[in-house]
Image 1 (tube, rainbow, N blue to C red):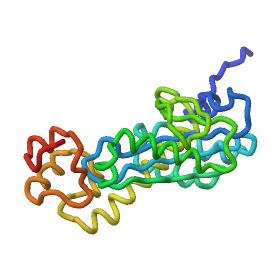
Image 2: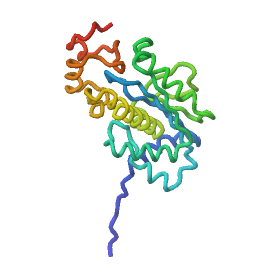
Image 3: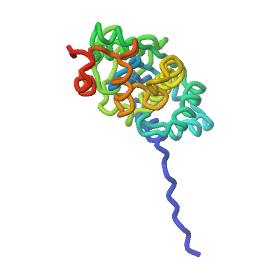
Image 4: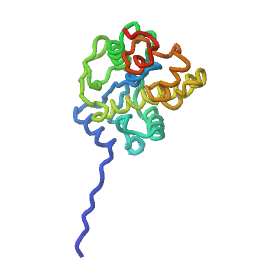
Length: 225
């Protein structure tokens, strides 16, 4: 009787972990951020360190759906965030509020937060990976990987932690404090509903005044700098 060949599908998470294992070291950390393109709310960066030698079969199963957070449904992101917290060696989250972003600039704040998140991994990872950018001090030695959140498991995990942390903040306390803005639906991004709320209600303390957005220009709420 002729045998039937079968093809085992490799999970997305396994592919990302394969990249991290290619460095040949046990501990790999990644950093990513959430909220760069929002009109309102903080910018949040996260760093996640995995001890690859300590990820057993159960951990690999729990993390098999790991991917760039933008590709994941909210419920999947939430489940993965729980799994990451359970299986990572360390997780760090740092944030900058709207006034800080206005004062220091979005890009500069982003680099600072990514650097701080990696610097707080203690002890330092054997390899540090960041999504796309070379970072200033106090970042440890690191590798900038374009589309890192779709390439590295550690960076993808950081993107999930940053995104879920930020979404919980915007859909929870922010939405409860300013219910008329619908933050639970758009978490601060420039949707039509958010723009309409801005027309009717104006800016809240969560809104970034220096953000050069066509939404702000069209609404004529203030003169972007």
